[in-house]
Structure formats: C-alpha cells, structure tokens
Image (cartoon, rainbow, N blue to C red; front, side, top):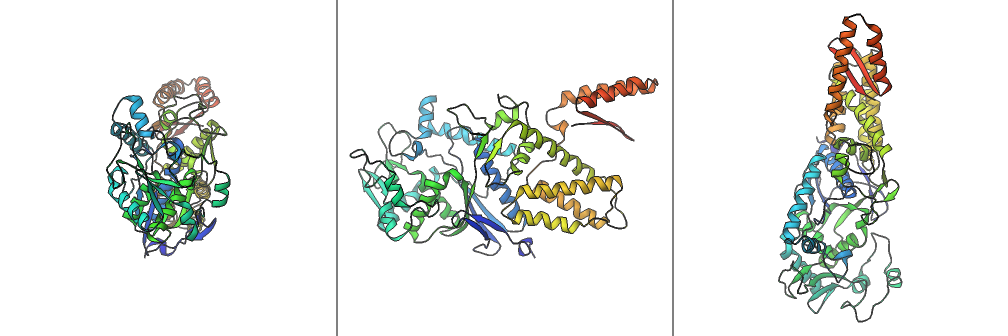
Length: 493
C-alpha cells in the first residue's frame, strides 16, 4: 500500500478559489506542468521562489508514492515584450545588444538557470521541453484552432478571436475578469493593429525583416505566440486533460487564461483540474524591480556581494527562509528575516546531528506517532510548510529533552523520530545537512580553534582566570564554547 492511500491532500485551486480534495485523474499517477523561465537573463529570485515551491510539492507527491510526471518548460523562442503585438522579443533584444546569436543567449542563461537550481538542491523535472523544439506542434495546434473557428489570419499573422470564443465559453474564468470589463478598459487604436479586437492575442506573428528568430509556417515566416507553447507542450506530454498546472501569480492573466482558451478552442475541454499559483517575493517591503534598483539576484544573495544584506547566506538557509512562508503568501525578503531563519536552520541541523547520538530506552514518554501525523497533516493542508516547520521544531524540543534525560524513547520510536526528521527536513523540504562551518566560516573556525588551544594551555598551566576570560569574551560576541569528553567545540549564536 502506498502512503497516498492513507493521506488525503487538500489544495487551493485558483480556478474555483477554494481548497479542494485532490483526486488524480488516474489513480497513483499525477501529471503536473509548471511554466519555466524565459532564458534571456539570469534567473530572477522571485522565479526561484516559485520553482522552489513546486519542487517541494513535487518532492511530497513523490514521497507519498505517486508516479509524478513533472513537466517544466524552457521558453527559448523569445516572445514580444509584454506580449505586445509589435516590437522586439526579449531574446533577440539581448542578442542584438550583446552582438551574439540568440541561441548563444539561450544557452548562457539556460546553463545559469540550471546551475542556480542545482545550488538550491532542486530535483530535476521529468521532462524539460523547449519552445523551439516544438514549433511543429504549435503550428498544428494553430491549424486546429483556425479550423474550429476561433482564430483568423491577417497579413501573415494569426490571432485568437476572444470575442468569438466567449460566445460559447467563458474567457476570464481563472482570473475572474469579465470580457465586458476588459473591453471597457481597453483604449482602441484605430489603424494600428491587424487584430479585430484589442483583446485578441497572437498565436503566430509574421517576422519583420530584422527579426532573427523565425520559422516557416503556412501563414508566413514568423514565430509562435507566447501562450501557445505551454498549451502545445503540456498537452503533448500530459494529455489533453491533466491534474496540476502551476506558475507564478503574475502568469494567471493573461498567460494561463489564454492557455485555457486555446485548449478549449482546440479540443473542447478545459485542460487542467487544479490551477496553483505561487505568490510574489518582495525585497524590504517593496516589489523587486530592475528599473528602481530594488532587486538582488541569487548569486548576489549567496555571495553577499550586494547592498541589501549584511552577509552571505547558505543555499539551505535561503530555502529554509522561503519554506517558512506559505507558497500562496507574499514573502518579504529582509536581512532580519534571513538572520532569524539562519539561527532557526542551524538549530534544526544541530538537533538533526544530535539525534544520531541518542540512546534508546525501555519505554517512551513522548507520543511520536502523533507528531508524525501532524507533519503529514500540515503538508496535506495545501502543502503548509510553515506549520510543518513548527512541528519539526517540536521534534527538536523532543531531541533536546531526550539528550538531557528528561524524556525517553524506545528503539522503535527513536527510529520513527529519525524517519520524521529525514523525510520532512531533507526529502520534502529539500534542505541539506550543513553546519555553520560548512557555510563559508572557515576563517572564523580557524581563529576560534587558535583561541581554544590558548585556553587549553591556560587551563594546563592552572591559569583559570585567562581560561574563563577567553570563554566569556567569546560568548559576548556570540560564540559559545562547549567542553565535552571529546574536546571543546563551539557554536555561533
């Protein structure tokens, strides 16, 4: 029997606006698609937060025993700025500015994307398709939508007819926007667009002479619209109807709304049962923005080479910080927040390492099975990682109590406690077991070791005043010495 048969997940469905019991289309199997990056620049920290949330969800579903096909695309066919119908696409713009080929841009930033995700201990998706690798599928999808009467061709470009679609379907049901309101809020620019209506969106764009990325099609040499690629790739690998579609909150409209419309126009059914959206990451209470300078990229945060943070932070500390907030909540990235998370993370790691040294007793004075189910209950409640972490710190308290001798566990219950820690800390949250000395504090470690040796010499010479002074002054700056049978160690508080 697989774990999922005894654990019922409730997840928040953006389509219905409420938590629903998760029921896969095919028992034991899950199809999940998440919109990946457009590779024209270094991956944004806000995107990392989104992908990290779905990495945690992927990990938990796999832990429960589901066979998960996780598809996350790479957008390497540059769509136009802001999904406009004129102008220059992001990848071509970068290629022109740097005087290199567009695919050099794609290669550089795809490698960067993978390096960053590897640094943060992501699991790779089951399939990572590219937009340029699925041009044929996108062209065939456009043909079907045209044949079904929901798209039209003008001067070599093809547009989705939102008004025609809305006669028999509901455009805007995901974002809760009414077409009438969209029409009212749209300024009509007569003679400046080939579209019948401003709300229509491009399925295929004819390439201007200067446009580098282009492919032949029945309508023109051009390139596909941004929304089209995800519909083509998700349905190719997961079928016309699959379980979960995820992405950032900013993609809900128009991107995901248009995906739904394209699928319904092509095959007559909504593509996804559960839509999931991760919320924004802010920096010091304000939206991250390159134009205002209120932004930091992952490398800068990891290295400490930035103007916002007092120090460098280990990847697992950042991952722990992100997991302390629900994926649906706006998360404010601050130095104080990271410092607090760092303390909490190393406290958890200290307990993890202490756990392996605990000795079993003849009886248990703690209810470990209830703690175990609490951890599952937290993840089953829309992947509530903050509550899960609270329960892990309950386990930390248990570990310290057992070490001090005030509580006891049998060998069987001690094994369950180890299972809880390993499963939820490492397998589900994706943290790595690192200590403070692993996180770039080698020089500090060396300096403290010198002081420990001086203190040992002072004690050997019966100079206890100097020995105590070294210990007390280190404690004043947050370094606590711990004397044990195997020597003296230290921790940074």
